[in-house]
Amino acid sequence: MDELFFLPPQAAIMPRAYWLDARNPILSSHIMLLEPSIPEFDRVQKAIDDADFGVYDMEIMNALYGRQKDCIVLPHRKYALLTGEFRRKTHRQYMGDDTWNAKAAFDEAKIIHFSDHPLPKPWDAKWEEVKDFKPECEESGDCQARDIWLTLYTDYWKRAHVGSDFLFEVVANIYIGYLLGRIWRITSCVLGSKQKLDKSISQVFFNTKCAELINSSFNQLRPALYL
Image 1 (spheres, rainbow, N blue to C red):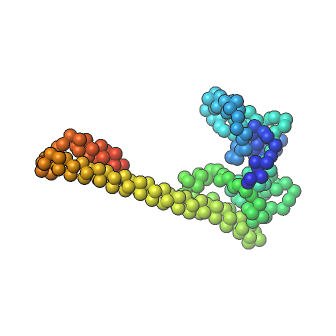
Image 2: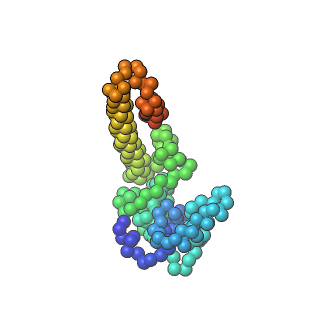
Image 3: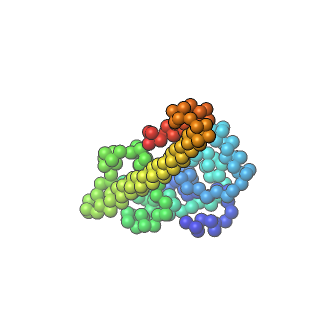
């Protein structure tokens, strides 16, 4: 998608929300190419602060940039394909006069946006819900649209599972390293105090410095017990 960075300078560039009424063109905000600008950032932030309940990013961006005469619109057939398109019976809004082919549309798309209302997003949806919403095969027996749609959801879950496992491993290793470091500091404190004060181990644990270290270590490491 590096080609987007070679487009002419513009405050905001977005694709058209092709699934909405074409007589009243609306831009989609699921992908936006923005030119860094402090004044424009302030405009967007003010619009967010002033927005009423039910006014979201898409409404805000269209109000600010969707009606500019020199607005640049990204082609939706590469940058705005919805997963819901694979569940539709007709595809004129997406394809125009061209013939729909699920595999060709999938291969051409650079971004596919999860949108299958009322099915929840994949991070909230359950497998039973996804199965109920899956596209039907065509009368000809072609099941490409169904298979691609199901693959999009299962592939997301697979990637999310791998990512969560990796994150858990990183966090666990951090806690283990931190725990070992704390144990070493406590041991050094106890043994150092014992040698210096020539007291028994039971007495050394009442040493104020060591007691504070042990207490703070326990409080800071408590979350690790719930991993």
